[in-house]
Picture 1 (cartoon, rainbow, N blue to C red):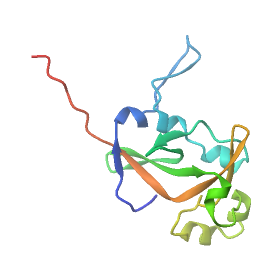
Picture 2 (cartoon, rainbow, N blue to C red; picture 1 turned 60 degrees about the vertical axis):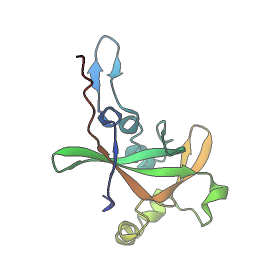
Picture 3 (tube, rainbow, N blue to C red; picture 1 turned 120 degrees about the horizontal axis):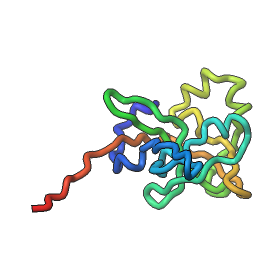
Length: 140
């Protein structure tokens, strides 16, 4: 995971939610958690619905424990015309995984992914998100 200082976000955005048998879906899942796509990237499938951070779409590639809390690592999605370098694929990154993991821009930087019918590039460095404190509103 990135050594960068995490941005704090509403903890609800990182929530895994809970499965509801009656509704046949996960309820209460946060948008950052729901965008987790590392499994899909590795299989060459389209990424899950991105979340917006600082007016840009991002997808989560890792959910990990950071001390006593859960943090998420995400990459920004950019159009190929905005990337400015030669894109790569997950398979190409795996030809030298040690070099890919040592990339200061992150392992997923430069990878081509599909989102719906569009093609994007994952752009690093990764952004780290941690739950922030929520304010309890006083009723009295």
